[in-house]
Amino acid sequence: MQIEIFELERVQSLWENRVEYNLTESGVHPYTLNELLGEEGAAALANVRLGYGQTNGSIPLRESIAALYPGAGSDNVLVTNGSAEANFVATWGTLDAGDEIVYMVPNYLQIRGISRAMGVTVRPLALRPELAWQPDLDELNTLVTSRTKVIAVCNPNNPTGMTLEPRAMAAVVAAAEHSGAWLFVDEVYRGAELDARDTASFWGRCDRVVITGGLSKAYALPGLRLGWLVGPEAFIEAAWSRTDYTSIAPGILSDEVAQRALEPALRARILERNRSLLRENLVTLREWIARQPVAMTLIPPQAGGMAFIRYDHDINSTVLATRLREEKSVLIVAGDCFGMDGYLRIGFGAEPAYLQRGLDRIGEFLATLA
Image (cartoon, one colour):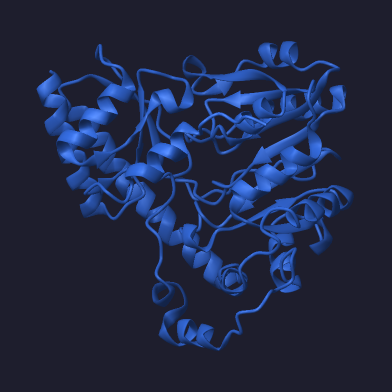
């Protein structure tokens, strides 16, 4: 099976640790263990025996995850190595060559790449900037047919930071129910809302819904590689069997730390810290945009640590991002990585001083273009 290069991940993997300023991240400045658990709590991990844990995630962790989704139980949850594994096993277990998937774009293009490699027809559902990054619901109803096996959306969305309006959510659910399709919803940015109000989950809105989540983005713990699937028990059982062929089990230390991070008091503290940082940094980013010599347009994100910015200059986004990296040692994501030239994704979840210095260098580069 041939699979296309995942351009976004390849660019980040090659360069994110080799530049002075990495502004490609879509999450929030990560915690250290001491910051998260305190020195005593972090030290206690030294006594954890490094064996295999429960391969679908420990019962306490699955119970804590299930508590985030009213009506779910531990058997509705599969713990995975990052939300990327969750997306992979869900896609692998549902789609076959000749099937069709309706796929929100722009988006994190992992599921699209897997689907194409499997011989699945991918029908893009475009988010429209003229609709403040909402989908055209008439187009949705045209795209979804009796041949549709999966409808896949990302809410809150990467890269735009958009959250679907209630009527759009209702339309997506209705389309899935009418066609009999599975509804895959990536909710990994849920909890990173700038207005501090939790994005409504798709969980419980129809019988054939599968949710992807994790601790990398809203929780600022990407190094744990801790993700999950939430879905019907039979679906989760089948997905668990597929992880026997991928990573087998989540890391025992990641499971232990995740249990603590999802305790209600600590979870609330994590989300408040991260949302506060994002709110502060978005002000900085918007003030910076207003000063730039190259005209830029930003539909303000509602969640997540990324801004999808349109720029008004006759230069390809990959060329711009490459020159910026080579000349200023700053890494950002070209719109080409999402199939949308003329845009840049800039992560603004970093420490404020780091973000400001990185933006200043981008501004210096843009001045040479102007």
